[in-house]
Length: 181
Image (cartoon, rainbow, N blue to C red):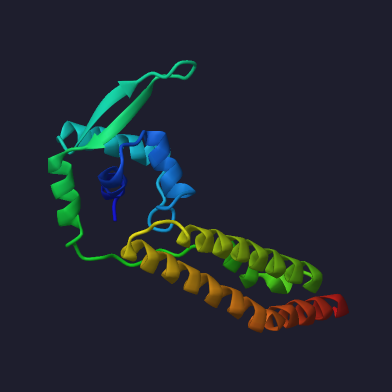
């Protein structure tokens, strides 16, 4: 999915500023789909507006700066709908934790255990957040997506718990071997 499609998907459901689109795509409900930077969102919105897929208006609230609000047009709704028929690309997975895990042989086991437990706690908080959203009034599709996310988090937590010792053994063995030489 490209950034234009992400913008259209958000605007399909509500009007938004570029800042709100960024927040939704990094910390909000769209953060599980595609991450978008300000440097990619604003050019995408500008192009979508130039091509007639979105419109914009300025709103001023007392004591607040003027905001540029974007709205999807009928032409934009059609473009987004048609994009749903496009072939779906591969998911992109990146993890700082996995980089850390790859080099546990350089680290003391106590730090490895600490980082694994920190990762588990972050995942539990993320799972609890998703579970709290399930209590909201959602569409069946939204519930399915949230349940998928919750299940993936649970798999990750269980894997970390059941395989933690493997990483600890690597850290301990490598550090003992290093100290012996």
